[in-house]
Image 1: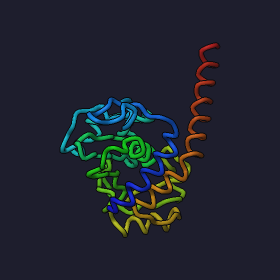
Image 2: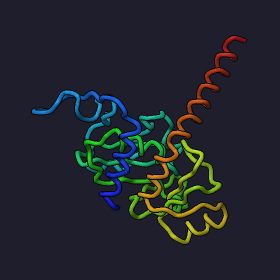
Image 3: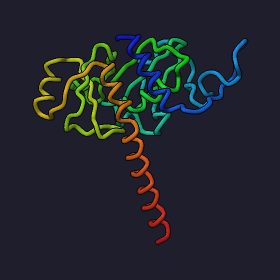
Image 4: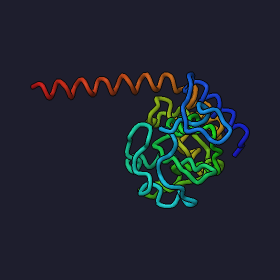
Length: 204
């Protein structure tokens, strides 16, 4: 994976998502207001093999609450160099994790491999995956879907059936950041509508 490109787009996302001061526990010799906000630091214990049984270890996405088993095909795992890991539901939420954890370098990033015929898609490292972006396949946390494949022949078949264009991880991550504003507005509207329906049902 192009680490320099990854860090560049992580910084771009961070600038958009964290436009104000951030608050973290200070480290020796540092300003008390520098660093990743404590509430966004991955909460699970460090694990050098975070990708093994990742759904069992990280069942819910920490950013949207979605079930990673249900969204096994789009799930991602960001494994940072201090062995903390963020198990998320999608590239959308992986982009958030990378933006918020700017003080952590990812040692590996994994994504569900849609080239696999298994009922629960295994993980593949993103540098070994091709992302089909903008196809008719339904997206997860985005209207502009981004689906990962480790096998070129399977990816080409998916493109022939559903359209879209191929991008590497850096390109797919950039698309996720570009799509973020519209996707967040859409998610907020959808959740507000769901709460409204729930309230109406309770009042009946």
